[in-house]
Image (cartoon, rainbow, N blue to C red; front, side, top):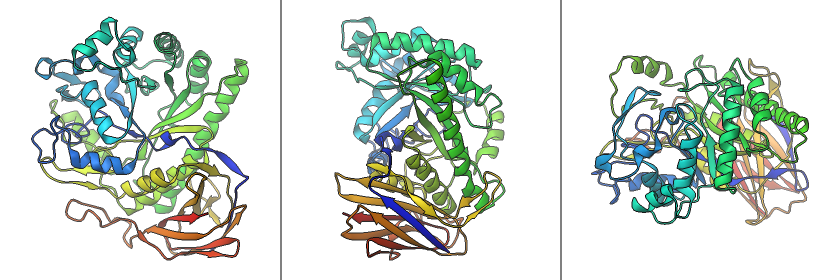
Length: 501
C-alpha cells in the first residue's frame, strides 16, 4: 500500500501544551492502595510510597496527575484525608461500593506527586457538597497563611502552600450514576458560582467545567451549550471523557474509533465558538480531555462483581490486562489529540496504576509496564513542540464509526529547541505493509532513527513474568531520501520516527 505525506514547517496546528500527556489517579480499586502506596513493601520509602512505581511514573514524564477522582470525588470529604492518620475516618465509597481508609489524602498525594515529577490537578466535590467546601479546599491548598484553613495546613505539617493551578469543578455531573447528578442548568449555575468564589480566593487558578461523560449521552451536545453559557466568563476548560471498547473483536472497527473521538472534539470546539460569539466574549475556552483509555477487558465482569460484594478495601477492580492491539489504539488516540492540540490543551490517561492503567503492581511484589505504557511514554517524551498540519494521501476504509478512515494514522511534531522532527505512525491494516513517501518542506534533515512496536499476536500481553513481551525495538523502516524520507510500516505496527535537523 502506497502513501504520500507532506510536512511543511510553515503549516502548524499549535504549540502543544505539555499537559496533553497528563495522567489520573482515583481512589478506586488498587490505584492508590498497593498501587502507589504500600507501607511495608520492600520498595516503600519512609512515607510508604512505592519507589519502583515512582520510577516508572517518572520515566513517563507525565506533567500533571488528576486527583482524587473521578466518580469517587462526588461523595468525598477532602477533610477526611488530613491530620493524624490514626484519627482519620473510614468511609463507605458510594461510587465503587468499597471502604475508603483515608490513609492517603492531599498531603500524601502532594508529596508523592513531587517525587514522581508531576504537578497536581485537583478536583472538588460538586456532587454531595458544594461551593463552601470547594472554597475551603482551595484555601487549604493554595493560601499562604493567616487564615483558618491555611493555618490548619501548617499545623498538619505543610507550612508553604502547594499552589495547585488546575482545578476540576466536579466530575461527570451529566451522568445519572454520579452522586449528586444534576441537570445542565443546575450544574451550570453551581459551577459558575463556585468558579467565582475560587477566583476571588485565588485569581491565578485554571478551572475545568464538566462537559459530557461521552458522546453517546442523551444530553450531548446540548449539555455543553447550556453549561458553557452559564460559565463561559469564569472557566478555562471544558472536560470531555471517552473510553474505547472492542467487545466484537473486530480490529478494523476498533481502530476506527478515534474518528469518532475526532468528531466529538470538533463538535465541542464548535459549541465553544458558538457560546463565545453568543456571549460576546474575548476569552478562549479550551478542552481538557481528562479521562481517556481503552476500557473493556474487565468492565462487564467487574460491574457484576461490584453489585455483590460487601464494601471491601482496595479490591482488585478494573484491572484490564492490555494487549498489543491496544498499543495501536492508544497510539491513534494520542495522535488525534496532537492533531487537535489547538483546542485540546490537556488530556489525562485514565488511570495511572493498576486500574485500567499502563503500570501494574503485585502487592508485596514487582511493578511492570503494560503494553500501552510504551506508546504513551514515547509520545510524552518526544511529542513536545509544535504539532504540524500534515497532508496525507493514503487508501481508506469504511467503518461503523466513520467512513473514509485512513489505513495510515500519522501525527508530526516539530521541536525547534531540540532540533527534531518526530512522527508517530500506526498502520491499521492487518496484512499490507504501507510504503510512505514523506516530503519534508522547509526542513533540512541530517539523520533519522526508527523505533517500532510490533507483535505477530494481537492478543500478546506483558505480565510480571514476561514484562517486555511487547516493547519498543530499533527499526530499520525509515530512511532519508532526497528532501524527504521513506517509511516502511509493517502491518499492524506502531512506529516513532525521529529526524534530526
